[in-house]
Length: 247
Image (cartoon, rainbow, N blue to C red):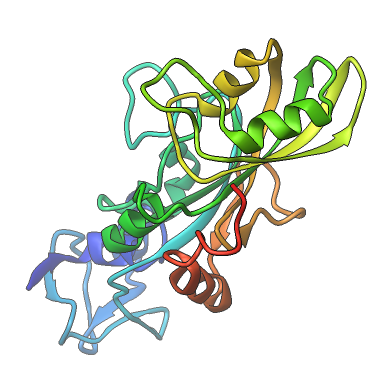
C-alpha cells in the first residue's frame, strides 16, 4: 500500500505533520538507505525501511492513548466553534484517531483516544455494562438515602430507570463530594441523576473506565500511551464487568 512519507512519519509518532516535513527537508529521513527530501514521496509502510536520524521507524496499525480531558473542550474530532480533545493530541495527530465515548464540555477526566474500532465498540456497547467511575462535587447534602436510591435505579425521564449505580459518599455537607460508578452512558446521565433527587452537579471528573484509572500525575490536557498492562486489562474485563458489580 502506497502512503505519503510525511503521513507515515506522523502516524508513527515521529512528530506532527508540519514537524516531520521539516525533518524530511532537513535530510534527516531516509528510505531504504536513500535520503528523501520530498514529504509527498510515496512508500510501502510494510516493506520499505524508513529511518529518522539513523533510527528505524515502524508503522503501528493501532495506537492507544489515555488523555486527561480538560474542561472547556468538546469530545469530538473536529468542531467549528470549540476546541476539541484532538487539539490536545496535535503532536501525535493521525486522521484515524477518535475518542472512545463522550464527556461533556465542562467535564474533566479520563478519555481513551485510539483508532481501534473493535475495542471502542466493546467498551461502549450497552450489553457489556463496562463501569465508569466519576468524582463529583454536589450542591446538596448526599446521604445514605441517595445511596439506596441510586442503587435501585433513578427515573431521569426516560422509558426505563437507570441501571443500578454505586454511590459512595466521600464528604458530606452542603457541598458533598462523592464517587459514582455507572454501567451505561445516557446523555448527561450523572447530572440528570442528581437533578432527579433535587441536587446539582458542580464539578464532574471521570476517574476510571473499566480497569483503567486516571493517573494522579497526569494533569488536565496531558496524555500518554496506554501501557501494555493497561491495554490487556481493558481487553480482559471489557465483557466481564457485569458479574460481581452492583452498578
